[in-house]
Each structure stands twice: as C-alpha cells, then as structure tokens.
Image (cartoon, rainbow over all chains, first blue to last red; front, side, top):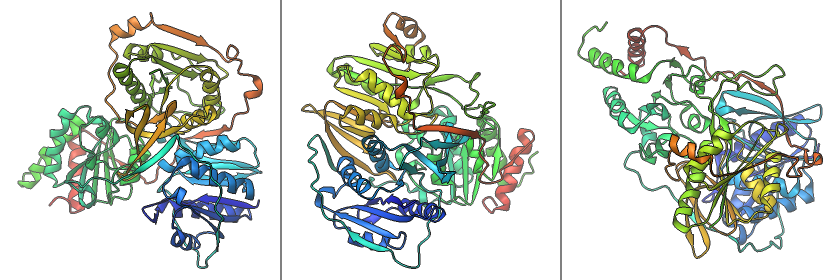
Length: 329
Length: 260
C-alpha cells in the first residue's frame, strides 16, 4: 500500500478537533500497512493550518484558493478528485460531519469508489477493507467490508478516537491552483454563528437531562422539580428540541453542547451517539430508562430500568426527606 | 411544484433486544414494529407543506425487500398524492449504493422540481442515499436542511453544522435536499385517513419491472457479522423495588457530595 489521504476540516480559521482524531486513526492504519499518511487542507489563506497539520502527517497538501474560501461541496470535490486521480491513494478518510457528509458520497459516485460512513475502526484483513460501525442506534455493531476496489472512502465518527501529535514535522506542499469549473447552481452564502444564550448548560455542575421518554412537554414540571431538589440545570437530547419542548440552548450532543458535569442524570434518553457524544465524559452518569437494552446504559455508571414517572416523584420526596433529616423508608 | 419524497420503512427498536440471525449477516426483526424513518417523516411533512402553499403533487417512493404497505399508506394518509413502491426480496437492505441506484433507475425518467430525502435512516445511519441519488441524477443538493424558502425559483436553505452553527446555501431547481429532524412538526395520520389512503394511486414495481439488471448488483457494502457491542463502562444496575432504588440513588448522591 502506498498512501492514506485524510481531509482536514476547519472552521473560522481553526482546524476542528475531529481532524486530529481522523489523522491519528489514519496514522495507525498507515503504520499497519506501510503506507504514507497525507493530510489535505482546502481553503483560502490557510498556510498556518498546513504548518499545524505537519505534526500529524508525513505530508500536508495545501490547496489555497479564494474560490474555496468557504466549504462548498462542488469545489471541494473538484479539488479532491484531482488529488485522488493524481496520487491514487488506497484510502481516503473524511470526518463524519455535516461538511464531510455533504462531500463524501458525491466524491464516491463521481470516482466510483466504494464508501462507508460513521466508522469506529478501520483495518485491512487479508487484503480486504474492513470497518466496525454501529447499527440500530448503537444497539448492535457490525463488521462490514467494502467491495474490492483500488481505493476506498470512509467517514470517521467524531469524538471517539484520541489525537496524538508527532514529534517531527512532515513535509508541506503547496499545490498549484486548478482551473475549477464554475458552479452557478449552488451558492454558499455564509455561516450563521450560534445566537447568544440565556443559559449556558456547559458550565453546570449538575445536569438533569430529559429525552423522548418524557412523552410530552406537560411532564417537564416534574423533571424541573427534581432538578430544583438537587440543584441542577435542565438539559435534553435532540427529540425534545425537535418537538419544541425545550429551546436549543438546552441541547446536549453533536449539534448542541458538550458537557462534563459532576452528575448527569439522564431521564428517558435512549443514548443515541449524537447525544452521548456531548455527555460521555461526565463524572457520574445515572440513567433511568424503561428499555433495558437502551444504549445509554453503555455509558452510564448506574442504571435504573423503570418507569420514570414512578421513579422521579419518589426520588423527589426522598431527597426532600433527607434534607429535613427524616429517615425515609 | 412536483415533489418526490424518498421514504424508508425502518424497524422501531426502542425497547427491543436485537439478536443477529444464525449467519450473523442479518438481524431478527420478526416481532419488531416498522414505521416511517423519523427523518423521512420530516421530509414528507415539508413536501406536503410546500404543496399546500404552491400547488403540485407529492409522490412518495420507497425501496425495500420487505412488505412496506403500512408505511406507504401512512404517507398517503398524511397527504402524499401517490406512491411508488419497489419491493423485491433481492433488494440488498444494507447497501446504500444499491438503494440509490434503484431509486435513480425509477426517478430518472420522472418529472420533478424537488426531491426530498431524510438526512439519514434510524436503522443504518449511513446518511448516503440522498447525496448518492443527487449525484447519479446530476442535480444540485444540500444536506441536513433545517429551514427552506423559495425565492424567485431558487431554494434558500439553512443547513445544520455542529455546535449550534448553521450555514446558508442556495440551489437552483430541480434539486435534492436531505432534511434534518426538527425542520417542522410532522402531522399525524388518522386511522380514517389511513383507511381512505387505499383509494389513492399506488404503483407496485419490482427489480425486473424496472429493468434493474443482474449486472447492476455490484453492491458496495457487505455485512460480515453483526454483534452485540461491549459497554464502554460497567454500568451498575440498581435492583429492587422503587423504595430501594430511590434510597440507593440518594445514597450515591450523598457519597459523591451532590446531596448533603
């Protein structure tokens, strides 16, 4: 094997953490297969990013062009296609992000390269490209192989791998600008930054989080009472925001906040990865869920398989009982 | 505006213990209910709302190896005008590329202004089919759309990024959008409407009738083996009756200094 290519992701002049995670994953795969690891960074005025990336790869390719000053799938695809056809890497790794997923599947179709997404582990077994990924919201995993091909594309899950810097710097190569085809039918107008928020759940020491399992917004006061009893702040998983039961500033997960409180009490949350990503490093996680197979129990320290509407009221009265020094039975 | 919505019927696995079959290449789903994929519900709702504002037709298309009548009827009951189902036991459920190619084979000769897909499916979570289909059809696309607006014949979309960021992207029609959850509030289908939905047009196809040739079966994704994941942490399950459980929780909270 010759080369593994990793696409670096950046926003507002900074490389995103996932870039280093994917590069570290790429390096391991490169070492196992005697391949070189190359990072590609595409953007405008990005020389400093190239220098930073050099500590993570054997070579960094910088494509610096005003035309790609924003992430635009069509222009990025043209640049990446050119690089892939020119260098013929065996593996192309792309972050499993909103940008990555706007780009990777179309690159796969254009160049006829088999693709798999949201992978956790990557290896070659007897010459076959093999990955491990989750199915059914994390209830099962599978070992998956792609059809034999000269090259493969995989998007790599965010936030589950370490990133390790090399001691020495790799080579930095500035690419010549390409004659990119104009794309009048798709225009990237610009970025919208998150609005200022009334509550910042990421600084809370105790979080009481609710999910779809609370059934209805009218059940929120019960959870608020519990939260008040233990001095917590209310947060939630995605469906609760989608259904407009709570505002987006309360969202924990990939599209919301990452939190690390002393206590994370997860109530009626199944534990899909896009939520778990935001809370898995909490000091203490207690989960209440009716489903004994809910993936949330895979990250929790303590689990309660029960109807939350039975547990929560009793918990509230127990807590108040303790506070007033009663020994509750 | 004529809109096509690609819909998948997926197993609703909440509460279920999933077990791989003997060969471990599939999962036993016999006693598990199926429903419209959550993301597709939002895509369908968006299509119906556009139709209600601008007129036109909504066609639902679904590919499966299984019986999907229930999901199809629900889509029609909610307001889709007609449905095309491609059901064939030869359909490789876990191969996004095959599904995209089958959809392409059917859609390429159809007339449409807009195609809406869910951003991903709850069962495989690939997030591949929409963009693959757009790329095969060679039409512009935007993924993870959270808001959309029609301005002078172009679509202005807001797509979701991570950590609360969003991005504005405009595309010309015809285009394909993959829709993120939360874009709207999907309506419910009444039992009455589901009953009436049978009177709407349902076109039933299989791979043979669409000339999806054997030679097209060069799928990309092959499951070697399903298995039950190990837990990241050893979770201590609190046992006993409610009184015992809640007493233990209070004890733990006291030990950790959260309660005094």
